[in-house]
Image (cartoon, rainbow, N blue to C red; front, side, top):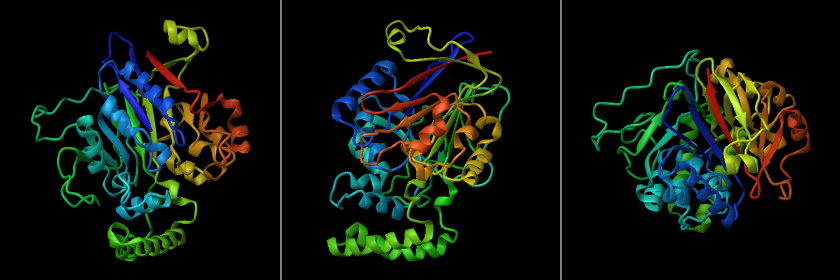
Length: 393
């Protein structure tokens, strides 16, 4: 789960920050504390952009509490068809009558039921085909607000309206709460910062129509069948999925989110030590650098050079080389990494959201060694990491 908030720029200083929390089965007290800390930072404002990287429990746990306590203007998540969402939900042990299963059936309906007015819209990021958004070399002008901003029947915010039937949702949510983010777009903040999401297009079959025809007969059994019918449908669907994509492809439906400065800014990095927490100042990291960007990969698949090259091409090399903070994919799992990824991304700081005591044993030793020269930092239920970037010309 990623949350981003932005303050109105004052004078020549623009401050933006990104907070990421990802934990397998977060304990209630750390989760409550993290939400309380973020609520204090937001000072009564809603989160501008809350991004769910994908549909696994350890990445969506606590989102309803967050929406109810703080709220979000836009909740962004990757688009995946209904059959894929159902497969992920049932694979995690959920039953059809579990309240949480509604999230996989229809995320918008789930948020509306559980969080009410805690969100303004849901933004689905479509698979990132073709070229990405152009790389701006100078700060851009802030977009003009729409003339009908105060009209409650008119959608606002990033993305574009969705007509009925365009998205595979179980309920009719074709109102202003549902929007679509097509390839090649970026979200600009005050003209000096941008967010670029990436939804790996390899998560789709090469022949979507043929694959959909094979999947459709299982949908009714998964949604409304008895236990035996559901188990048979799930087994068949899982076999079809693995034959098409491979056994380890489930996590590939995971957003990568790039956030970076636009134009020739310098990033002044500061740590989150106790002095900084108490006095908003410390002497830990004071060097200036031209990098001023973050890249959050969720549980994405960067297991080969070609995977990284495809992502780099979509983002544009001008963006990729600016990464100062890189979240290592899938908690540092070896299966989502390839040797040399650290040098290819070349971050100043590499973040591992992991728990070495868990039976998965993340991060893997080879992955950690690869990123060790890049200030490897572990984030878990006991230790967090926050970053403030002050942009200076």
